[in-house]
Image (cartoon, rainbow, N blue to C red):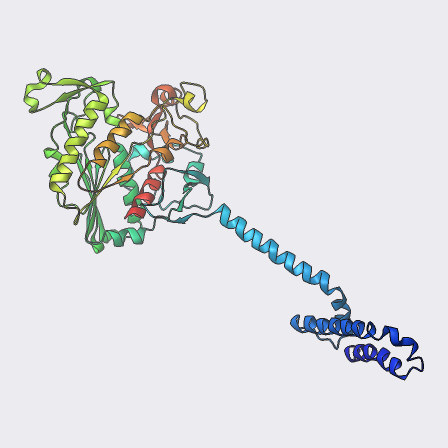
Amino acid sequence: MPFITLFWLLALPQRLFVASPSTIMMKGYRGKLPLSIITVTLCGFAVLALLYSERLSFLSSSSFLKSKSCARRTSAVVKAKDETTEKNLENLELDDRFEFDPEECDITRGKWVFNRSIKPLYRDRSCPYVDRQFSCVKNGRLDLDYRYWEWQPDDCYLPRFDPEVALEKLRGKRLVFAGDSLQRSQWESFVCMIEWTIPPQKKSMKRGKIRNVFKAKEYNASIEFYWAPFLVESNTEVNILEPKKRIIKVDSVSKQSKNWEGADILAFNTYVWWMIGLRLKTLWGSFANGAEGYTQLDTPVAYKIGLKTWANWIDSTINPNKTRVFFTTMSSIHSKSRDWGREDGLKCFNETKPVMKKKFWGSGSNKDMMSVVAGVINKMKVPVSVLNITQLSEYRIDAHSSIYTETGGRLLNDEEKADPGRHADCIHWCLPGVPDTWNQIFLAHL
């Protein structure tokens, strides 16, 4: 038994010392030798403690031999623990985002991350409600990478869109999207993201020129879209007129608002239809005055008056205890490819990746108009949740309908596709695509 032998050997010099006839000669070492013996003995106890703590058998000669390098081994263990701690701290520094909180998370700050594992909840071929205008793959687009980018905010985790959670949130409720064709694409996206979970006999869709209603019968929920490109009235809602003939009745929403009343959730937008020129024809009072009664105003001024009319209706009509109100900021337009350093005239044609430059802002998004929205909403009495989708959409030059769209009820022909400068649609988005991310943010707010 090596350990007992060790202690016998440690005690042996003392026995020899007592029996030695030279005791007188060794007198000078009496004070030093016991100290050495005590030191060696303590080391032996240290070896025993280490062996016990490591759960090794001191009866094994090989284990005992390993214990000779105890200092080196202890150092390695401490070093390994330090490295693990450092790695954990590094991980915390790399990703210190918190769970989504609309009051705390700045959704505008972040980046698009490519993730091939993302599976869209629908496809333009599988969802029957996607307009041909947004059905890029069905219309011939071959590159599909635009579907696999996810928005990752710097501050927080943005939860994935869960259809069942969305339907439960809407149980017994009426959700109305109101606005232009971009708002219609968000409505179509929302419907497509949930409808595939509902059996055919438990859902319905009724479509019209102005109002569209999807119903999830089992949930007693309706998800509607109401066409109101200016939110206020105009002479170009039913029969689309060329821009020069459009007149906006900036003092009234009464025609549209009767379809918004009674909704539990209202989601509005308006922007792109205002951007038809530097000045707009605006009207107070009746359209009976026709061409004689309008006044031309600078676009931001007309926009502000129109938004104030909408805001006054919200403040005077909506009970915030019963109805939640959302406003989606302007969707980015990418009609000038020189904004991101490409040959001018191509617009968004043939783009396959987002812009990676932080805070990229193209010429298609008017900051003055965005300031108008902020100014009006900040003065409202009824709380309005702003879905600020502009900056994250700015980066997505790759995700527009481009030449894979229709015009006048037909797909672009080969000659038109060969001239993207004139015919590429860099306003609207492919579905599935960027509007799905808008709805991801929307649901997170709900």
